[in-house]
Image 1 (cartoon, rainbow, N blue to C red):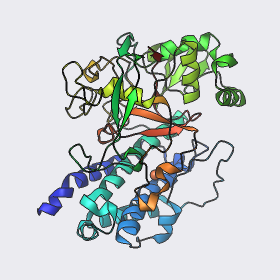
Image 2 (tube, protein in one colour):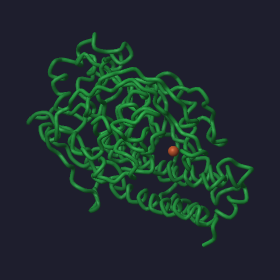
Image 3 (cartoon, rainbow, N blue to C red):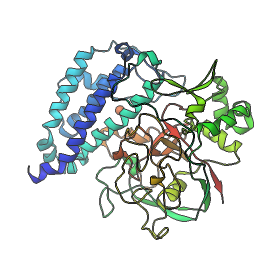
Length: 454
Ligand SMILES: [Fe+2]
C-alpha cells in the first residue's frame, strides 16, 4: 500500500460497509413496497435505490473527474431528492426503470468508485473535494444519512409492506430508566462549527459546519433528559392539541388542517393508545419510556404547556460540550463528545449506530452524560432546537456541484436539530454536524428537551 492509498483506505472500508448496509435496508421491504411513496412529499422508494449511486457519480464522477457514468440518463433521473412544501407534492410521472437495471447501474458506479483514487488524487488543487480524498467522505456521509431517511420512510409504510429481516433486533421498550432533573448551566462562550484545517480541524465537513466560530450563551436551566412518551401523554390528555394559546400561529394552522390530536406515530385502538415502531405497533404503556418523536411545532406547544421552552443550538452545545476555554469540573473543554474525548461506542455512550433498531427508554445511557450531568445528547433521537437554520457569519457553499445543499433551506421555516438518533452512524456524531427540518415535518426520529431561563 502506498502512502497515498493509505490516506483513503479507512474511508473506502467504511464506504464498502455503508453500501452493504444500503442493500440490506431494502431487504426489509416486501417487493411491491418499492413503488410506494410513503411520504407524499418525497419520491417513491425505488427512486432511492438509484439515487444513492447517482448522487455518488454526480459528485465524484461528473463533479471531480468530469466524466460520464455508464448510464448518463440515470445520473439525471435519480439526481436529487426533493423538499417541497405541503400542498406542492410531486406528481409521480415517471415510469421508473426495472430494479435489475438500477442494480446494474449501482454496481457499475461502485466499481468505478473503487478504481477512482489515482484519478481523484491527480485532481487535487483543481477541485476542493479532491483534496485528501474528501469526496469519499462526502459520498459516504450522504449514504449514511440516507440510511436514516430510508428508515423513517419505511416506518410510514403499513406493516404488511415490510417483511423484516433476521438482523433486525426486537425493540427495547419499558418505562424511563431515570427521572429528568433540572440542571443549571453557567453562562459561557461555546465553539460552534469547525475548520477543515488547523489543530482542531476535521477531515470532512459540510458547508453549514464551516468555519469554527464562537457564540456567547447566558445562564440557563436544562432538563437532564428528553421528554418521554409517558410525559407527553399528559399534554394530550390535558387537551394540548385543542388549546390554541399553546401553539405558534403556523403550527396551530397546521394541526387544524390535518385534524391532528396525537403525534403521528400514535393511534387509538380498541385496547387503548398504541405507538408505531418499524415492524409493529406497541401499547403506549410499553413504549412510555421512549423519547417522544414529534414535529418542532408540537415540541414548542408542549414546552409552553410546561412553562418552559426549547433550548437553542448554542445552549445545547454549552450543556453538552462545555464552554470553549474554561475547564468544566476539571476537564478540558470543549470536549470532543459530551462524555469526553473517547470515540463513540454504543450502547455505552448512547443509542446510535444501529446498536438497537428502535429508541430506548430515556436515561438508559448514563455513560454518555456531559460534565454537567445532562444525558442522552447523542443518539436515540435528533433533538429539536429553537434555532432557525440560517446562514451564519462566514458561511459559504463549499461543494461546487451542490451549492444549494444548505442554502436552499435558509427560509426561516427549517430548524436546527442536534445530536443524532438510533439510526445515525457514529461518523456523523462530530460536534459540528447539524441536521435541519421544517417546523411541521413529523417523520424523522426526533426528541426534544425543556429549557428555562435562569
Ligand atoms: Fe440524497
